Length: 130
Image 1 (cartoon, helix red, strand yellow):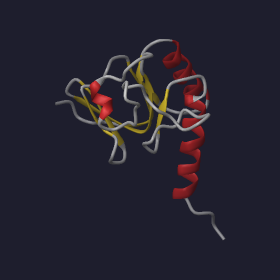
Image 2 (cartoon, one colour):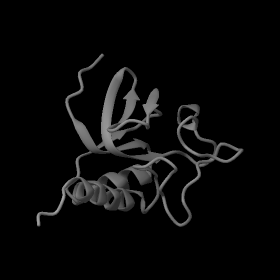
Image 3 (spheres, rainbow, N blue to C red):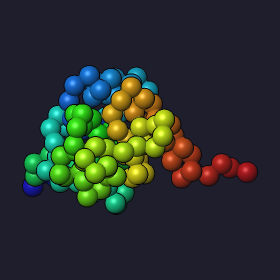
């Protein structure tokens, strides 16, 4: 198994235009994104940092954007992410946020929401000096 060398700010899983846009927005805002162009072999969305396996390689990220195709989610996501009876990913109303903190559904706003969430998380972990 490969050694873990880094925790990425953002792991973007999937393909297509949503991935390119999310990665571009992340980089333009100083984040360190990693794109995984295929369905992960395994996930751990309970522990922090979040973990995504690309084959045998374990990747760690502070936030994850899922760029799943339209239609039912691949089975690897279903134990973690809320979905309807047809297997379609559910998000908060008018948002790309999923039921898992730090995990976003790909879309035009996913990277921007991840940036806002990461900023709020960062601010919460660094108290303001008196």
